[in-house]
Image 1: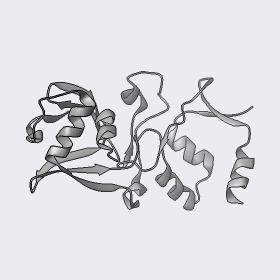
Image 2: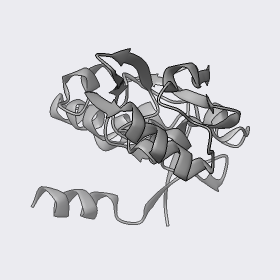
Image 3: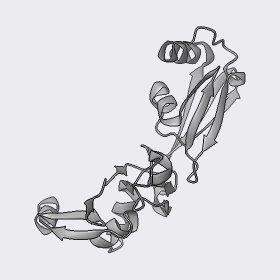
Length: 185
C-alpha cells in the first residue's frame, strides 16, 4: 500500500538539472558521505551529485565489514584477475592505495606494477565498498570496508531514516541531487 501510494504520487515526475535528465545514482549504505559525481566520473557533467553527509548510515548493519583473506588465496585471485604472475604471499608490500577521493573512497590502487581503480579492486575481491583499509594481521590480510555499494548519490539507508523523521520525497531527493527541477511529463 505504501509503495503504491508513493508510485501514484510521483507518477510522471522526472528530475532534471538545467533542462537535462539527471543520473539518479544510488547505493545501499555510504561510509558516512556520498561521493562527488564530478570526482568519481572525472567529468564536470555531474554538478548535482555533490558530496553530502549521511549521518544515519553508521547505524546500518551494513556500515562496517571486516574480511580476512588468506595471503596465498588473495594473491592467486588478484594474479588471475590482473594477469600478473609475480605476486607472492608478501602482498602487503605489493599493494598500495595510491589515491582517495574527498569522501574517503579509494580511487586508485597499485598491485605490483599494475594500477587500477578502487572499484575494480573492490569487485575482484568482492568487497562491500571501495572505502577500505588493509592491514596484515595474524598471517592474514584484513580488509575493513565502510558502506555497501559505490557511494555515489542517494544512500538508501540514510534516505529511509530521513523519511522516518518526516522528510518528504522532494526534500530527500533535493538533499542528494542539488539544484534539480521536478518536472511532470
